[in-house]
Amino acid sequence: MKKFINTPESYVDDMLTGLVMAHPDIVRKGKQGRTLARRDGVSNGRVGIATGGGAGHLPLFAGYLGEGFADSCAVGNVFEGPNLQSCVDAINLADGGSGVLLLYGNYGGDRMNFDMASKLAATNDIETVLATDDIASASREEMSKRRGVAGIVFAYKAAGAAARTGASLKDVADIARRTVARTRTIGLGMKSCRLPGATGEISELGDNEVELGLGIHGEPGLWRRPMASADALVDEMISRLLEEGPDDKGHRRLAVMVNGLGATPLEELYIAFRRVGNVLAAQGLHVVMPLVGSFATSMEMAGLSVTLCFLDDELEKLLSAQATCPFWSVQ
Image (cartoon, one colour):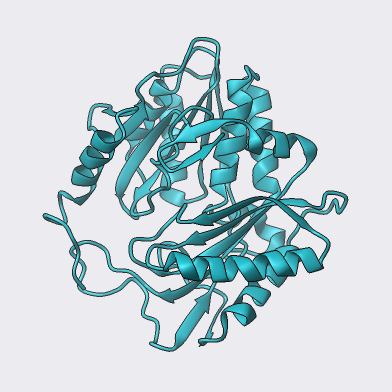
């Protein structure tokens, strides 16, 4: 498999250099250059939002820095959590004097280093919220063990909008938790990916095989079966997501993301969204925020994920608030 790189060792730093050159509102900071931040910083009196994660998932995580989104991001090696120093730098860069929300995916290495960084940062006014939207990664009874995937984007947006209004750290964290609690994602892999410098793919799939629930680092999914029609696959994905919906059934409005995992043509994502929209409409559910594109990828993995965020009135308002970052703008 060919990769457009210089060397495996320079992959992440070359990427970060190009990213900030292309998006001058973002700068590289920190002692190791592995922390990104908004150029305009965090204004005094506003809660800051820090995030982080391994490289290999753009636009996640580093692509969601901007007005109404996150403020800083610690970046690790490909599919590896950021190191301790980068996490400390991310917290300090997001500190505008009113506290910092740590919002990141539920992965062991990320948790360990951000937990330690919280004790070493210049501020101790910190709240932590973990994204746990991947329904294939643990049962409903063990939701706290679920991984965070594309659904974290909705949490960035809602928390960022709340912070922009001047909300307190507690209120911003509560908004992030509520968004996570009302968001569900399931993925479908059709072909795996290969890390820079590796000799094989992280998960082997047959030419006519698909895997429901394949993780963004190649974690095993729920099943492997022969390829089926797009409609049949989407039907099962939506069925599982709706079964996992929040307990309150009064809210019938959804934000919906059909996300490409890296190598899936946009045309095929729209084929998927067509079925998603029709199935939800048949259930009496209204899609008020449709998102189709690549929002959280896994190198050149072929496949897609579907995310449903079950909105309440406040979350709908926050997700609709004006915001901008390199990969998503809401006007």
